[in-house]
Length: 270
Image 1 (tube, rainbow, N blue to C red):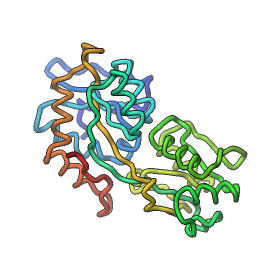
Image 2: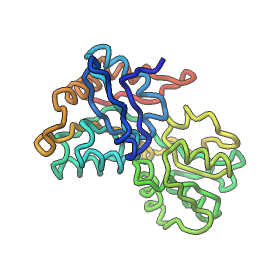
Image 3: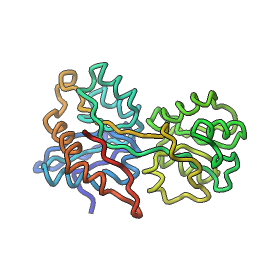
């Protein structure tokens, strides 16, 4: 049975739809995070451990990184956990967050039809793979949603010296799961984090065509929203979550999350 004190919201419109907790409910924080961390099942694995240890429940707002940070800027979250370092550092530098702390990492992979119509398996690196897709005008499905994955994709196109456009380049404006579903239906190429790929059941004719490039490294950072800017932020409880997830116990919980024997995220906190 699902924890009645934990709510996963698929978008900003869900903020007004939270059900009232009973009078005797435990205290909680609101965490703005990514669709990749939610879709992978990570939170379902680690949050009950945190709640059991501290008595603090966690409500997750699941969005792309850009939207998650915007939610936090408005003060609609206590903590943000995302994966776009430049945006995270700007968020802190602008005074919206207290400090960015490394939590974990995984990597991105480029997936596409098993037949590999653009020859990605022969590509020397990720930018070369993106260039091969463009030259072949092989269908590519982008999240197009200002997420960390979308930012990583744009960096790869830039490194390849390509501005993606044309009928072969599609933008879903959706999360990673929905984008992978679109890619599977076509079939088409896409950039995805490995965790979501490993937990994605509807792969159809898709497979990993390129992986292992250092440019595909995907770190996640956690930030307490600045309580001086938003006094209602639950700084004590939010910091308790940050302290836990970067502790030996929290890092061990992250490392122990696997699907089919494969580890999805790797601890990185110092």
